[in-house]
Amino acid sequence: MVDLRDRDALEQIFASTKFDAVIHFAGMKAVGESVQKPLLYYNNNLIGTITLLEVMAAHGCKKLVFSSSATVYGWPKEVPCTEEFPLSAANPYGRTKLTIEEICRDVQHADPDWKIILLRYFNPVGAHPSGYIGEDPRGIPNNLMPFIQQVAVGRRPALTVFGTDYNTVDGTGVRDYIHVVDLADGHIAALLKLEEANIGCVVYNLGTGKGTSVLEMVRAFEQASGKQIPLVKAGRRPGDAEIVYASTKKAERELKWKAKYGIDEMCRDQWNWASQNPYGYGSPDSSD
Ligand code: UDP
Image 1 (tube, rainbow, N blue to C red):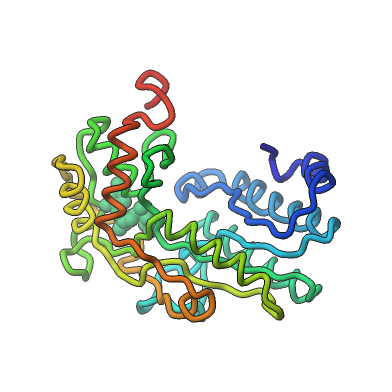
Image 2 (image 1 turned 180 degrees about the horizontal axis):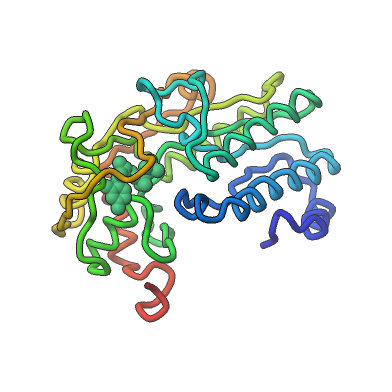
């Protein structure tokens, strides 16, 4: 494992192996932390990516799949979000994703040998069906599903529901949750696409195209786990959008990829991972 900003270490890796393509997932991703520590985010995410692109180019590896995010749609005026929607950043984390997208477009424009696919993830959740690989955030989880999971295994007393007065089916925020296995398949489809001619720098949404509210997700998780998730209703979380879900047409058409799993499978696999690993990769003592 190397830090992408460590040019010498990266050089060594690219000198030792000839890579066909790179999937670039490396980056910091906590919105709140990015507001507190913007320079940390700009330094890690932007300098890491620029160094990677430079070293790739120097070694003649010019095929890239980059993990972007639906956060670049900001607060969408309408749904579903298509790839052509106007882009904006609501926080430093989002600004790093948006800036990296723009850097990639510029790099490819300057040197048409590059082929770059930007994948805009919606809300990845769930775990590998084996139960061996799952998400294990440090500290208090920011995201809904890891939080629900920690309530279900008894690590936290209740889920705080941020906002019950949205203009949605039950007043809670709506998102497009996508199973991590579907997300992984989307990357395989992108790698295959990179083999085609004249890709340029192109962007695809990776979502299911379906919106699910916080309460719908809680109910699905209760069903899958047999556990009750106590709720505390609270005000809106600053910066949160009301409804975000993807248009999946472009990915279906051009990547021949479509999500297979719904929220029941997401909750089933998340619970399988959680119940076998209630403290993630750590132990009760090492975890908070
Ligand atoms: N949410 C919530 N309680 C939590 C975490 C999230 O009610 O402890 C809500 C949040 O307001 C949003 C949805 O769950 O409506 C998804 O939040 P998450 O942070 O997972 O994704 P994002 O908002 O970044 O799309």
